[in-house]
Amino acid sequence: MSQAEALVSDPELRIALAQLNLLVGDVAGNTCRIIETLDEARALGADLVLFPELAVCGYPPEDLLFHAGLRQQVADAVAKIGRATAGLTAVVGYPEYTDQEIYNAAAAFSDGTLVGNYRKHCLPNYSVFDEERYFDVGNDPCVIEVQGIRVGLTICEDVWETEPCRRAAAAGAQIIVSINGSPFRADKQGLREQVLAERAADTGLPLVYQNLVGGQDELVFDGGSCVVTPAGDTVFRAPAFDEVLSLVTASLQGERVVIAPGEVAPVVDADAGIYK
Image (cartoon, rainbow, N blue to C red; front, side, top):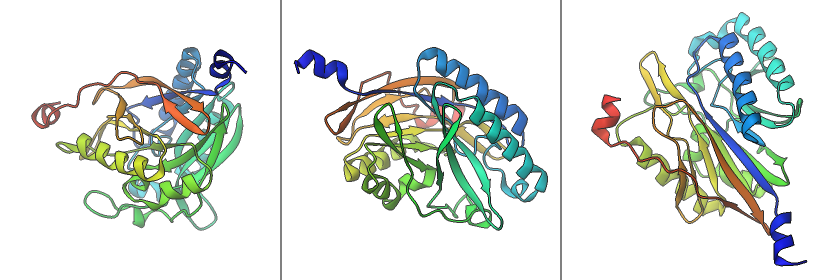
């Protein structure tokens, strides 16, 4: 095989990061936004679309999770979103209800079919977080294949600890994605990317980080979706505080996934971040 033929045959994965402002409790409205975004991502040629943590119900839902009406709304919404994934794969955060438990979960749909479901491993229970009150702990990694590339799923706090990413790598992931509801504080983006670089270096895999924007009660979410390589380089960063649908491209070269450099929006400094 010639070098040109080898380059053509390298699997390529176009990942859309949907940095959206979704509202707690507005399941119907959030579902419409998600489906509209799927249409936009499809028009851009995306293969995989990432939506925020608990996108279906909004984050943080808190005691709303205990209302029976929310459970049915979420079930109907997730089924509707799944049917809307013709021609692409989507990873969507939602509360997963079983007989006795609730999980902070991510459903992966491909062309209308559920191909994976991940339950968050690490539940933050400090500062503004009290997820242990609501959710049970997941333990199993989830790796899905999209465009010939094996994608490991994680949710928010999972990348702040070492084990979830290691489990994804051990399960065969070639790239790790993280969907988030990570709130703003001054100088948070630098800390995020430092932690992401540690996880990427530890696993030897690039890490795609997608975050929420907007305000919910006392919390503000600043976006800052980004991609960090195992060498610690940030090769993509979305603008802070803005709703954007961004596309990044990953290619499989041998067994190694390489991310094509994209837009790297400037990090907003502490004073400007507080003002925004």
